[in-house]
Amino acid sequence: MLSSNPNPWKRALFYLVAVIAPILALILRLALERAYGDLPHYVLFYPVVFLVAMLGDAWAGLLAAMTSALLVVYWVLPPIHQFAVSRTNDAIGLVIFCGMGLSISVAAELYHRDRRKLAIFQREQAVRVERRSADARYRTLFNSMDEGFCVVEVILDENHKPVDYRFLEINPSFEKQTGIVAAQGKRMRDLEADHEEYWFEIYGRVALTGQPVRFQREAKQLNAWFDLYAFRIGRPEDRHVAVLFTNITERKQVEKALLRSEKLAAVGQMAVAMAHELNNPLAAMTNLLFITKTVEGLPEAALRLLETADLELRRMAHITRQSLGFYRESTAPALTSVEAVLESTVELLKSKISAKHAVIEKQWNGEVQVTAVAGELRQVFSNLLVNSLDAIHEGGTIKVRTSANCRYVRVTVADNGKGISASVRQHIFEPFFTTKGITGAGLGLWISKEIIERHGGRIQIHSEVNRGTVVSVLLRFAPQGEKEIAA
Image 1 (cartoon, helix red, strand yellow):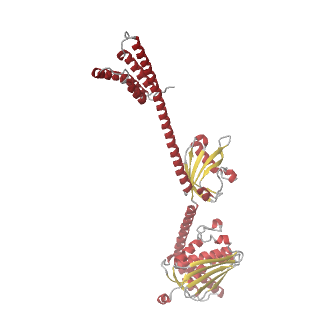
Image 2 (cartoon, helix red, strand yellow):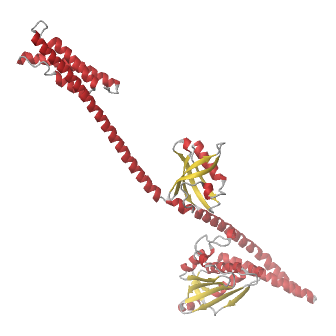
Image 3 (spheres, one colour):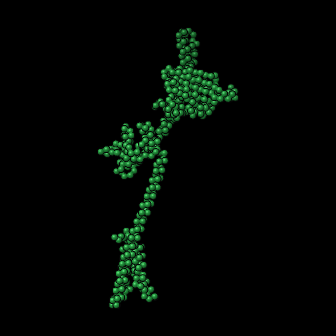
């Protein structure tokens, strides 16, 4: 019933004090009796028993009481040969002292137990408060973080092979980044029957080995790329895996677009180099043809053939000069003829136009000029014409029209193609949005809009499904003063 202090060294110390303290009390009592005369038998022993019991434990209090009782019997009480009545009273006093010592020890033990219970209760309360605080902080972070987060339970078959996993917990960003809703508590195969086995294997390896992994992977069912970090939590037998991930689809698209741009730039530089190298032999061949045509006595058929060859060589020379001009033209805004840029764009796309058997109707409204970068305008018009060529059926018509007022020059590219639905028009200027599948980067119209707005203009699209599309580009009209200076 009576417990002892769990620390053996501390307990031994208190037992030693329980023996020494009554002896010191006896010595002090004898000294006080010599100075002040007779004192009550137990005047200093009650405080000793109380202090030892309160500072130590019940056994130390009992030991102090027993030691005090023995000291009182042998050193304080009258000798045994004195009157019986006195010995009876002393015996009763001794019994009372021993009973009080026992009571004090039991009371001290109960006090110590209550103190320990109170300390345990306070520690438990502090732990509960800390847990609630930590859980509140975790929940705040869990619900507000931009990264997707989920905890899954890996499900194994009888051969301990991972065959599925169940979502135990998901945060709001999980649904936003994956598009999977109401996944908590469900198995992945219930949400997507044809889910890739790779995900089961990687989460199963983390759950069974406890080794965290960091990897990037395309989720083909979601048509998205993710950067993931998976690690095991809880007990190994629970097979719980926490997954922190970020949707990096846009970053991957940017990387692909940059890679494609680098390839196109390399091809462009190679084409310019080839055009530069072809210039000299083309000039030599042109001169040789001219000299050959002046030779007397050539048959008429041969002259016609030489004339045809001369025309084709001139066409090749024009293409090489045009390629070199695209590469070397200035990137600073300057007075630019809109019609000249449109003509060069149509010439650049001549082979694609011929392959589609498209009809290009040009409707120029006189010579109009704008202050712009010619190469950037050519890029915009090229994007618009290519989109129209992709939209029309074979033999379709594309009308290219220019008009001007006192403020703006309007360039209109209209086709009779398949048109654009309202749902697609909402996203048509967004980067990486495309309806051309893997053949399109989804950057053409976005870049075109950025270029036109940088020139202080705007671009508008009107379309009807199965009727066609009209794209209008508005550019600021060059002031008359600028025209005079240019002239």
